[in-house]
Length: 324
Ligand code: NDP
Image (cartoon, rainbow, N blue to C red; front, side):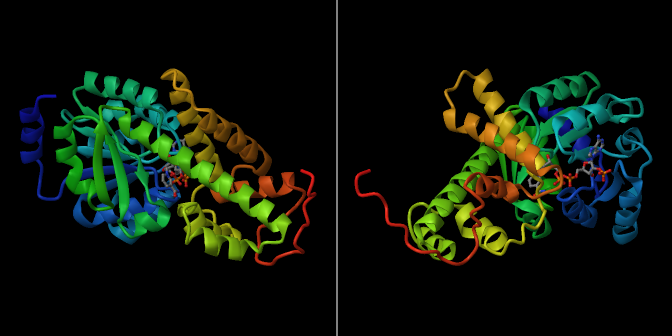
């Protein structure tokens, strides 16, 4: 991209940049709430009642269609379940491409697929705009606290144009490479998350069968070298309590691990564990359905282990066969 082109578009914008936010879901809503504080914001959501409620609370305007939202913005942010839905609202009749302003930037905060993002970037470029994949990490609580990590794929000059808006919800904003690299890094990060959840669950189940209280096991692991975000935060808060609050759907983590496995296949990278994580989380998703939290995947593991529940309390110490 010609950086003078982007800076001229920036200088022609008003003090409050004209921004559109499409996708007011679990994480999109708190992100958009921060964006609303410093921009002239228009929102669109498939279920319009959510956009109306958001507008009433924040003063943002509501667009009837993705095209209407794009018409009013120099920076368009999308945050949908997957690249499938993003591409749909880009190309559909009354979609983003129809309303795209010259030099506008489409920033996709969806955890997307690099190949689809690259295809969308091509279409956006053909219409005179710019595209950046910018998936986030940090969860709903990170979005509320404006401490998200934002993994960007695209052009450095485009990132500088949109950085002030990303900074409203992001504490760490990193250019990871060209278009698709943010998506790729996010997919690998979430594959690691899935592996940590599943392997921590496996460990706690076998320890419980041995007679070790899962609360004791986590206390020790979290002061030792096997600890992770799963052991330090997810298991104490969501599994031991049996609360499983639904902040990030298992269906979405399944999608992310599939993307990572697909990247491994396309790059001809041997990735036995990530491929296996993809199979395990697909099975958990199928078993547990659409509307459970990602950490609930351990419920499948508990069932496979003979209905051992990872909750505080130790059983009898199991005496192992000395001959094995
Ligand atoms: P949700 O399922 O809570 O929300 C999805 C949003 O997409 C809703 O606004 C929904 O609209 C909209 N949507 C769904 N299908 C369509 C469609 N066919 N056309 C148009 N809009 C549609 O997802 P999240 O907010 O949790 O996640 C959004 C993205 O962020 C995902 O890619 C996810 O992987 C990622 N992410 C989520 C995190 C989290 O903690 N939740 C953490 C990090 C990343 P409607 O209101 O009508 O249902």
